[in-house]
Length: 363
Image (tube, rainbow, N blue to C red; front, side):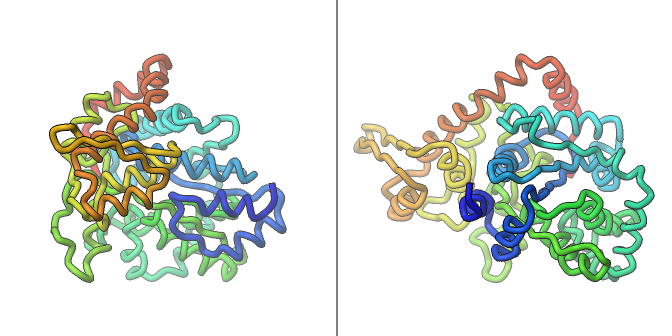
C-alpha cells in the first residue's frame, strides 16, 4: 500500500479534520509503523458513537499499517465521577468496552489495550503531568473541560483541573504519533501540539472524527445563528440519556422504537440525526440504500448509491421522514446483528452487559 492510500484511509469518514495532512504524509514517509491512540472513559453502555464510529477509525488505522493503542482511562472516569466513582464498576466497564469493539469487528490481536491503572504506576508519567500543568493557566484548564463533557463553571474540585494535563500526558507517555479522537477532544489535542516540542517531546498529528448526533430534538430549535456549536455539543448521542442513543446491542424492537420517535425534520439536513446515521454508518456499511414509499402514498422504490444522492432527494421532499426512518432502522438492525449474537454467546461479555444494565449511568 502506498502512502496516498494510507492517507486516504486515515482521512476517510467519519474523519472530519486532520491537523495536518502534510504532517500525516511526512509521518508515513519517515516512520514504518506510526502509533495512534484513542482514549475512553469506561462509563457504561456502548452506543453507536463510541461503538461503530470509533471502531471504523480503529479499523481504518489498522488497515493503513498504524499500531493502534486504546487507553481505557479508568482514572479519568473516576475523576469525572462516572458510575458513581466506583472503581470496580469502572474497571468492569473497561472490559465491557473491549468486548464491544471485538463484537464490531476490531481484531483484538491488532489493538493494544492500555489500562490507565497500570500506565499511571510509572512515576515518569506524573512528572509529565506536572511539566504540562506548569504550562497551563487555570483559565485554560477550565476552558478545556469540554473534553470531560463538562462546562467551565462545573470545575468544582482541583481534580477537575488535573484532567486536561493528564490527558495530554497520556499522549507522550504512550509515545503517540497520531491522536485519533472525537471533535470534542480537540482542545486537549491542540494543547499537546502546542506544548510537545516546547517540553522536549514532539508534535502529534491530530485526526478528529465526527460525533454522532443524539436522537432527540435540540433544546433550542430552530438553531439560533451563532449558537449552533454550543447547542449541538449538548445534543450529541449520550449513554446517560438512553432515549437519545441507540446502543449496539439494542433489540430490533428497541431500534425501531427509538428511530420511530427520533427527531427528523422534513427537508432539513443541518441537524437531522437519522440522516446522520445514514451518512456515517449506513453508507459506510452499504454500497446502496433502498427506500420504499407505501402504496397509499403513491408507492415507489428509490435506490441510492451515495449519501449525497439521498440528501438531495430529502431536501426536495421526495423522501418522507417516516420512510427514511424505516429504511435506516432495518439496515441498522442487520448491521448490528453480529453484536447481538456475540453478547448472546460470549459468557463474559454477557456478564458485563447484565451488570452495567442495572447500574445508573451518570454524565
